Image 1 (tube, helix red, strand yellow):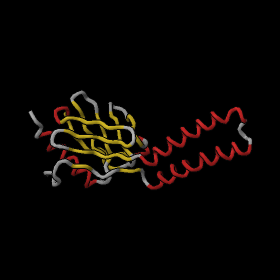
Image 2 (cartoon, rainbow, N blue to C red):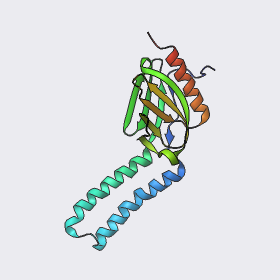
Image 3 (tube, rainbow, N blue to C red):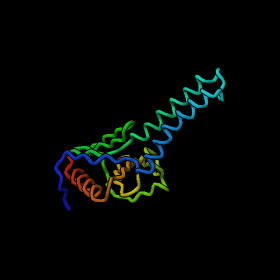
Length: 168
């Protein structure tokens, strides 16, 4: 089967699922509200409020980053770029790719986000589903979960075509 989309190709952005987004959004709003209430009622001593505010900012930025996070794959004739917004980008040249495969991912087993899931695999997964595994000549693996099976099949075929037609 050959790919049907011209290169360069950019997949859809994959966001967290709606229930997880709602949970992080509620926590993003509830954490500052709780901290402000504790500061206003005197539950936090006056000499400790700078530390409390620092923790509040850290929690707000972390949860806000989770709400905004998404990932995608970009494929050109000679490379693949993995993007996990807001913190990670990795470009892999076609000459560095040794294998391409698909894998079914269950977030209950591996978690969500940008993470190492063992076996030298760095995963980008904001949801469960079909993921594409790109293995390099150095035996590092990169897994990116796609929005749906059709998009995973298309990207897998584009990657295989790119690898088979690599320069050199």
